[in-house]
Length: 447
Image (cartoon, rainbow, N blue to C red; front, side, top):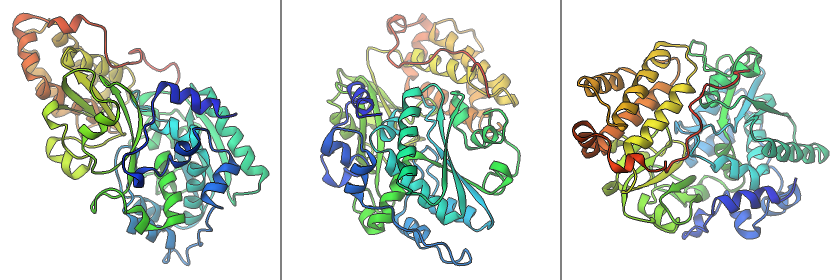
């Protein structure tokens, strides 16, 4: 596999050079060469993989302590402190397992796909280091089987590392069914254990008993790439970007009504408006932005000056989520865009619990009726009641995300709701969709 993969992705998604040089980290090699980093290129730029000291009795873990001082949090959506996850598995003792979550099932996100296209060895370095720290002898790298090119590229990268005898642990590549909830950590564990790629809501948790009944650590691809850089350059270097409370950089996929949609590496704390400006600016006046993806939150346009941190976004009911920012123009119908996303989320649920089996389809159906201007008298009371009931009741967080999206749309597009209820669908509801949404059809297989 050569740099044509990266070039193909770059032609679809622009990757602008950060205004702040300290933000050019994960993608620094791409900025310098515009090409996929081969193993030779990677080692020339970053040097050999640091040796992670094996913990002494699980009490002294230098790399975990460095990650903790750096303040690295997960970049997959939940934002959980990375060091706490490492320590939780390492302290279980015995043989453990590491899983690299590169599924990126969020339809509006391409950040992990691009990172793996241009800097695969940075992700794999992080996986090997994390595996060494927790006492794992095997690393499972999980990709969706719909991305054959990405699979071939990573296969080649793993072969290069094997020939170079680079890694003290075994790395295995897997292609999984590509459903929205298949990227959930227990879905990956279930599939690797021979079951369906569906969330498993019952205890024990994966860090207690996961793949092959061993303690298992599941980490997002971008998170592991940051870990590899912290191991080389230290926590103080990592903290030179971002904010004191939320340090470092993060990858964001920007799309919608912007001149140059693409993947950006930005320092945490960067205002949303700055991220939009770096994407060439809005193509027309904005009505709202979708932050976090299909399980994220709609924010009205007046909130775009908010910094990209959990602390600043939390009062607005939002978070960075999976690193997605979609700009919605005034000419689009936010209710129609949301209805299509909810229909997709309902179709891609695992249908294993009441909120997913009954609640999500009901919310999606009511939202579709609202967007089409076909609301009955009790529709709004049902929507408010159901979106309040869904969270914290499912086998996983899938219904929580769908409820968050629906509730935020009712707030952000309150004027449109009144229009659709009293006068029927607005003119924008009949225009082509702005946000690409996959077909609202159940996955062909969970295995």
